[in-house]
Image 1 (tube, rainbow, N blue to C red):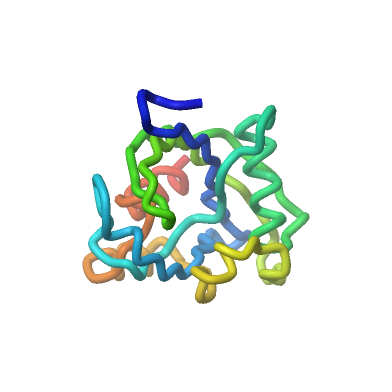
Image 2 (cartoon, rainbow, N blue to C red):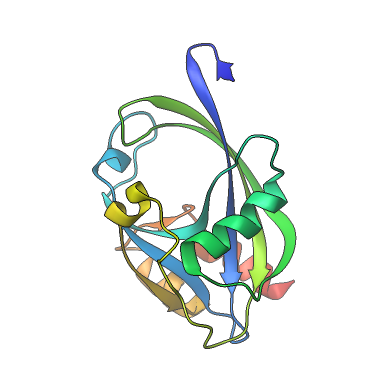
Length: 162
């Protein structure tokens, strides 16, 4: 599927919160993130769990699958979509993509183990680690670190307030 000459990429991400209201963020190093339209300010950034949809897959199905593939977590309660975004980006292969993304809230128990065993090669090469952040930590670090989606502190605050 294309948008003119630009490929469309449907993606699902999850604001994955534990029982202590901490969000799981993946530490990413991706030089392509600073290229193309709408570049990020840094090639090192924190990213919500998630990724592209498979053919015939719903956004909700992809969100569940991506949580398992990227973290190994199976004990997930998937909540509603809290954000819809569209943007054009340059992928790591230098191709422009029109990303149509939905972000869901997910809940998991505190202390659940995280595993990167299900990562695809590109994920394995760009994912440096992970961290669980409180809302206060996200707000305190946003001025000097990049959290994606941009404005995560505000979004997380809205979710936590209900």
